[in-house]
Amino acid sequence: MLMGRRTSNIGFDDVAEKLDDFEGIDGYSPVINGSTYIKNSKNDSISTSYIGCNSDYATVSDKTISEGRFLTSFDISGSLNVAVVGSYIANELFPDGDAIDSYIKLNGQKFKIVGIFTETASSEEGSSDDVIVIPYTVATRLNKMASPSTILLRASDPDEVLNISTQLEKLLFDLYEDEDLYNVTSMEAMLETLNSVTGTLMIVLGGIAAISLIVGGIGIMNIMIVSVTERTREIGIRKAIGARKINILIQFLIESLIITGIGGIIGILLGCGVISIIGKIGLVPSVYSMEWIFISFGVSLGIGLIFGLFPAYKAASMNPIDALRTN
Image 1 (cartoon, rainbow, N blue to C red):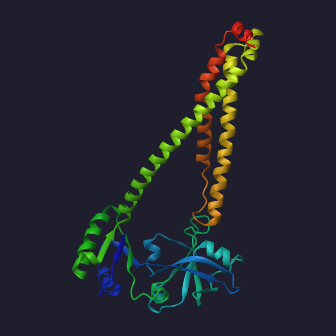
Image 2 (image 1 turned 30 degrees about the vertical axis):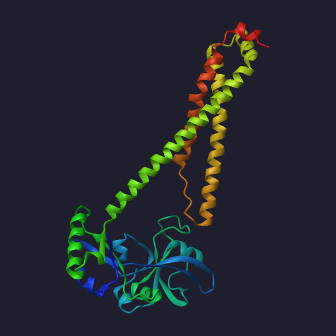
Image 3 (image 1 turned 90 degrees about the vertical axis):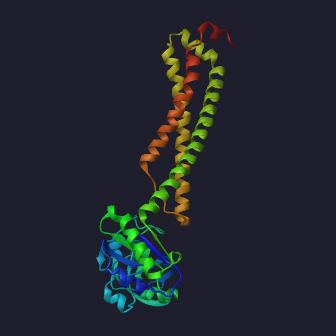
């Protein structure tokens, strides 16, 4: 769950004091987001994002450590310049695997790496592995913030999320006495909204794809009809020397499948190329699904089969005598 606070005289410590006695949660952590350039001792630098949090963040965000340790309460209370980094940062700045206990510079300040997160997204730039976590007490200083404005909580029982959200709203109202100064959002509600938007988008894209497939299929059918018309005499000769109806039908279906198959391969190569370019630019991580690649290729063959059936049947149904009379 996310709990956001707007400008108020009541700070994070006041809210934290109430949350310490709150039942039904595994923990809570303030979240301060920022972006910066970080450097290693060799002055190699990369742009990344950082998160200011407390020692509960690993629990509430379901992150695990592959090497070293996570932030401790001593790191938080002492405002120590320590950091836990994602595998992407560790691999980029410390390719020799010596990231633990090494130092990096963030906004000109030296930080000691005490832990590395377990890889979750193939260590790609812009992914969840491209992150650095520092004590929120240090992040407030870097962001020049008086107090964190967002708190992340994890419910002990997923079925109690709605009930806990209601209790949190009551707690905050008692504290702020103004519901306009805070908001509580559950990840479940955010996920439902996201699924609704994604579902609508998929329907729209599916409609566009369906129209494109129909238009492409009609184009394939027209091409095959022209091919049958231009090869009428060839069809007549083949039938005259013993070709059966099924042989002619299969011949033209295969030709239709070859055309759409080549088109499908070109489309897959173009799609993968565009995804790769977008991934290198850094807009979104480049992800390929072999399952959907095979499905899309199968759809292209299906279009060739469906829309090539009529021209193939027309060719197979020709009277050989009439076909031979054609110039």
